[in-house]
Image (cartoon, rainbow, N blue to C red; front, side, top):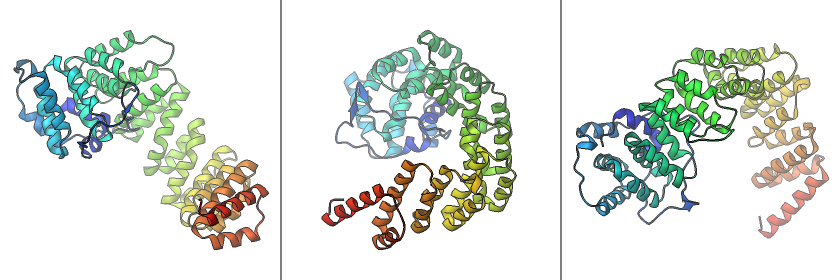
Length: 425
């Protein structure tokens, strides 16, 4: 079968160009197996849309369609050749050889080839090759490929790969199959792969499918697949798409996934966008936006912060400012908390400590008493002082002797000291 460049792009979108070319394959036997089949990896939150020029070059050299090829060699010979390819040392040669091998397969050869490939063990380095096999199978017989995936795989990688490929060539047929093969009240698990396939060619249709899904992990996956293609249209277009969403949870999910990236180029506009759309995303991303802003222009970020109304959004923004300051100057982070005490929450203090105890443990440890929740306060004492004792026990011990700490923390430190002396860390 001749794999077209578009088909190869569909395969590579699933695993990223880096994963496709990375690593060498061991020749010492199968990788670990879990449950009913090999362990497969999860797709990345934002997948690469890159492609392999080597793969495209190899494809272009092949001008003979699968249906016109004579089937060469016995089944055993073909499987032996596949194993030899998979165990090759050079990833470039391995990928060229695999494309040539796929070109020789007939529609009825794929199930055996994929099953044999899986029996060799699917490692992180083999996911690209696995994706190419599944993509080629989906191009000639997607229903058989999906039947195999349903029977033999435990997570969504294989089915998503197949459905993504099918959706790029016949999306209506893929959607009909997904609707006919799922019964239940929750989200249809077959739709994310279809959304992925549609995202580049028909984002409006992909958006419609996404909006039809209830709040779920599957809808989150579909959103992750669609957003990179929307972002290619620009920040303003993406914001407009997000603003048009009627489902609050979907809208907040999209805002949470994009706000920090938007802040890299327009922190002021992103902060205003979040404030104009109060909700979960605003609660969870104000600190990120102000943290990014402060790392670029601390005075502008601080000036904006002072204009915010009192409340959670302002405290969250302060958390971002404090975190950014603590990375470079822990004492400046403390100064910010002292300057705006009404906006300081336990999370603000915790962030200041987390970002500063590696460089200035004394300053960090002194701030722990500001945490109002007793359990959180004691846990932070343990983590900070344990780290300090490991790095500089003399200074840590001197600080402990001159500062009040909870009795439970003191008992913990005494036990740790005994363990150190006995060599049982």
